[in-house]
Amino acid sequence: MEERVPLLKVENLKQYFPISKKFTVKAVDDVSFEIYPGETYGLVGESGSGKTTIGRSVIRLYDPTAGKITFDGVDITGKMSAADEKKLRTEMQMIFQDPMACLNPRQKVADIIGQGLDIHHLYTDKADRDAKIARILEKVGLAPEHAERYPHQFSGGQRQRVGIARALIMNPKLIIADECISALDVSIQAQVVNLMRDIQQETGAAYLFIAHDLSMVKYISDRIGVLHLGHLVETGTTEEIFANPVHPYTRSLISAIPHPNPAVERTRTSMHYDYFTSGIDYLAGELRTIEGTHKVLATEEEFEKWTKAEKNYR
Image (cartoon, rainbow, N blue to C red; front, side):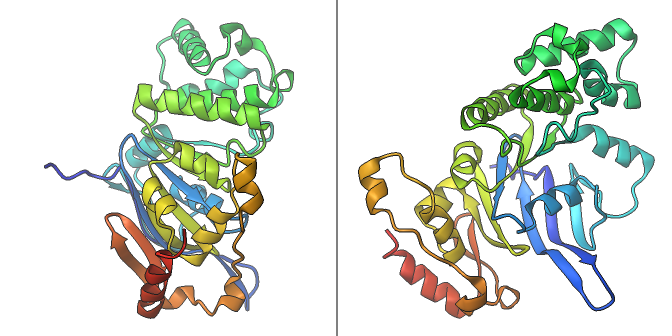
């Protein structure tokens, strides 16, 4: 069987922000993961855990403090050549959290979506440009005439579709979706996520799906990474994480998901996890394999304790 080659490989990524001479925020601390072509890797964790920082470091909006990022066989960590930078800017795109904040209110939708085409000269003439914009608008469920409107004339869900169209028009291999549904109503969230799944099946693009809603991550992701305080505490396939959560933080997240059955919901007990009183030291642990691709950040003693406790979890 031919070995799969990852599209994105993040190795020992660190992203530190010096606040003063004596204090540095370690937003991301020694995180490693891989994303394969056509799959969705869900990065989940509470606010402030470092999810967005990882996304911005991967797409090089931040210069990583340490570590290595390889995209489609090219090291994009340090100074890049013009060809490598063009590859990164065209083949990796980002969908941001707040659609209104990331769309220029003074530009028409056609100019917002076509900006990447303009920068990289990816059309032959104006008719070709207009045709590409019209096709991508139809793909995300908007009409071609919407190209002449301004962002304020759309609803939140429609604006996010414009953001998705802006990313898709570059025909990227990897899309980083940074909390792209958190600002939307629940019904609109479902529409946008279903749209993203349909587009993935059609284009074969890979997603780094960043969210704090574990139930939505479960729905869209093939594999999941659980992030806490800048550390990747557990990773595995969606089935492995939900059927066999090992780390106490992962178990607390899953236990907090509301159940649609009222009878089950009444008896649901949420687990509480506090890192500072738990006695767990993330720096002392290492990623240990449980089974298959399922790994957990733990010391040897914690690993034995948690794997035994997991049998009694359900």
